Length: 299
Image: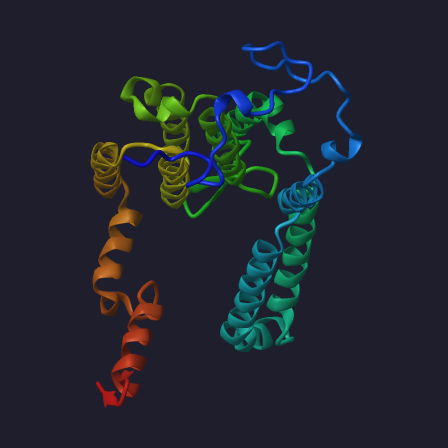
């Protein structure tokens, strides 16, 4: 039987003839060299990751896509406002651009505030989230006190010209985000979700119920649920939340006449065409007169 030696396999070399590492005793593994590593090896491949880190930091500081999306929505809203209000502005205010100019000033102030707040490090909010929370609660309590909060159409929602419920919306974003980031597992247990998430929502719902301010309650609960879902809340937790929300809406429907009126107008806008159902009824009339164009078919 032929032997696979160096004659038949040129790459074969007997173990006894293999070169041993330098400065290594016979039969023992070589020790790692203590010679200094050239500086060039430390810098190999570090330029690209550094550039990637810089781009990542810039992305956190300024998000161009979000900014231009907000700007586009803002411009679209102003155009829609002008098209819907220029006749009333001309008739009641003497200038067709009265409402759009006023809203444009508010939009510019809000845009400047958005840019300014985006420059603040988000970690700063983690240190003051409790202060913001208690300030928002105190303002909602002040609104509920007769003589302090301003009442319009049987709803006491204003305090010194602004609605504290707007601060409550921002507070939910800040507090929920901080709590989820601090303890991601807190959204995966019913017990840890009740405190603090559920308690804060219940406190806001109770204070807004006194105003009353149904739309703010729906928005605040929606913001909180979206953050919890993004943080990893199990989907089946959503069922009791929906049940609780339906119960709150039913309670408001029974307790407040204006809520019942809105539901009735929403279901049948022609029941009050001259007032609350004007927009809904006119929209249906416009669609019925012009029809819908779906592809080549005209409905």
